[in-house]
Amino acid sequence: MTAAPVSLFNTLTRRVEPLQPLAPPRVTLYTCGPTVWNYAHIGNFRTFLFEDLLRRWLEHSGYDVFQIMNLTDVDDRTIKAARQAGKRLAEHTAPFTKAFFEDRDYLRIRPAHVYPAATEYMPQMIALVSRLLERGVAYKGEDGSVYFAIGKFPTYGRLSQLDKREIKVGARVASDEYAKGDPSDFALWKKADAEDEAVGAAWDAPFGRGRPGWHLECSAMSLEEIGKRFQVQTLDIHAGGIDLIFPHHENEIAQSEGATGQAFVRHWVHGEFLNVRGTKMSKRHGNFLTARDLREQGVDAAAVRLLFFQTHYRQPVDFTDESGGPGAGSGAREACRATRYGCRDRVERRSQRPARRRRAVRLRSGRQSRAR
Image 1 (cartoon, rainbow, N blue to C red):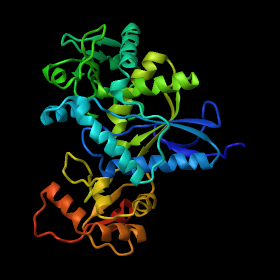
Image 2: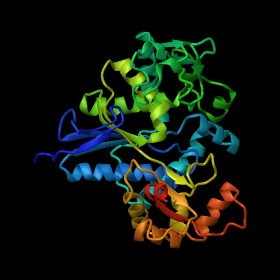
Image 3: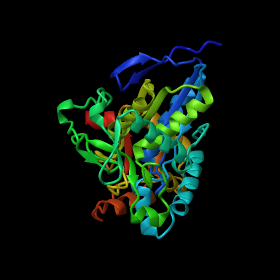
Image 4: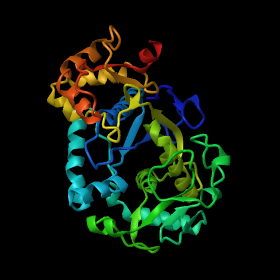
């Protein structure tokens, strides 16, 4: 059976292009998974649901999809959370990993074929850093950490359409997350500090005891999985939320292509945010709901799926107080009715909204928000 033609918007080129896998009908699909420092919220799951729909459509179209979804169980956030909880890293992340799989099943998301956890791929990560050092695109700083030299990767910034004039040659950033306006050499391997050691997040390496930078993890895990299974070094599709374009996916490209000399991804696909009154849903803003909040309120997963799927994945969905009207459709109305009290109150408490505001939370599409 010949697979049907499929076209997707490619973030790299900013155009809708035909999907052209390396070895059709096989499609390798890498999807950035959860960081298991806490429960994943429904903003995270909007991305996971769009990736589930993408996979289902590809399989319906005749493609043999092999999906990889990583689990980030070591990074700045997981280490900080474990330290605050007074636990070892593995002890802290294990319950949230289990909860993610439970939430995945509740929302009827097809399991990926493999879920590589970062802490289980240290040899591959150490090997990737060594390769980058050998090729001269990485260096060890005086602070004991290893950095990627973005000035030695001429195409750095093409995915995020970075203004090359903003690049600060020789400047470094050790944090996992930073702004697009501050492109700097980023950490591949961070020298272990007392907090890392306290929670068990430090590993020995030829270039010093430490831990991987967040960006390194996805490159190492994806290259390992497609390399050992299909003997290739290029993914057909890499998907995630738009917030990952910079710096995460930009840095993945640099690391992977800097090590292999080959294109890392043929087709980049990114989904928009789930917003709350125009602001991205996130734990940082305290304006979030988890999948278990919805499940506890008796919301049928079909209503959640319909709510998200009736809006294009590259358009935001807004979670708002306004009464709406026909707005979001029957699926959204069902979700709103089911979450009217309990879930609304959770959002209000987390965002510390004034108690006098007691209108029901409504869900509607970003397109309708702009039209009003």
